Image (tube, rainbow, N blue to C red; front, top):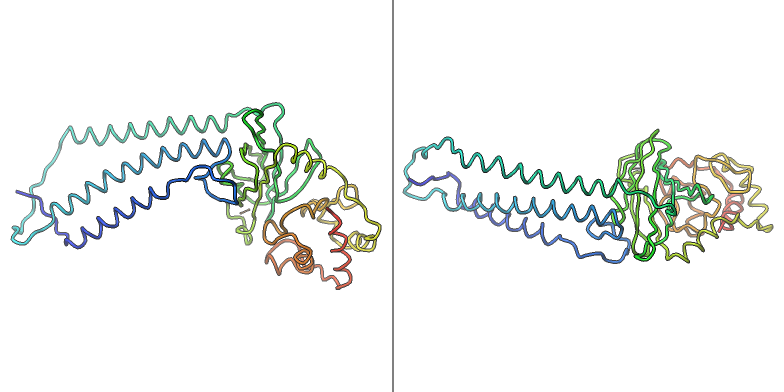
Length: 353
Ligand code: CUA
């Protein structure tokens, strides 16, 4: 006697079609390998050693899970179609079968073996990524998560900047990884630049570490990956990877104190007599605030408000007039500046190249 299920044939076809579509979608999403870092946010286009390791293990896990999906879904679809109810079938319960040592052994042992393979492969990748020993000449940076921007310090180089991590490119002939310490000034954040490495949480009162080793120059984008309040979604991050000589140039420019332009003395005076200096620092001046981004080389950065708008004179003006207009909830208040004060301050800020 044949087993008969009480499923309508139509359902079987819908299921089979959905199954085929899903499996096609799963595999057509498979990666085009290692494109240029054209502001891509895909873990399937790794351009850094730890990201490559994570990518490889994810392919293995996807392949194994995909195979399981095909086998289980295929058998299910076959069964539904093959044993569907047909006109003229007897209306009674099919024979009930209990206990088969072979089958039970198979569906216990095979999954254990699969899980074991995944555990071993994952453990090896975790060891490769987390156990990496920094070379003596590796670049070190400290990234501090704030609501809602990133402070970036290079303790050995005396540089503090914001929202843009500049690093040299790593080459076959000379590896130049960057090791990061991650700290938080307030709540939990998460540092994530998909092409460079996996996510790492940024936790208050704790120091996490990670590393990146980009293999192509360019701009890599990322963002905070842990909900941290109102502007979490606009806590963006750029990693700018330079060829070695370029990086040295950037370094030298950042290490210089800002040029004091006497024509901007009026603007500077307004800046130093308002509360701006309670939150912001400008190296070599009496502005030593720690709460907001360091402004020493403000105009060398690409964006304002952690990636919210391009860093242009017009946007800077709008931002200083009322940050809440561009980024509601930002912790920088509207300073209620007069037009004259605003123009002077922005004039001064524009000299901080
Ligand atoms: Cu910081 Cu989400």
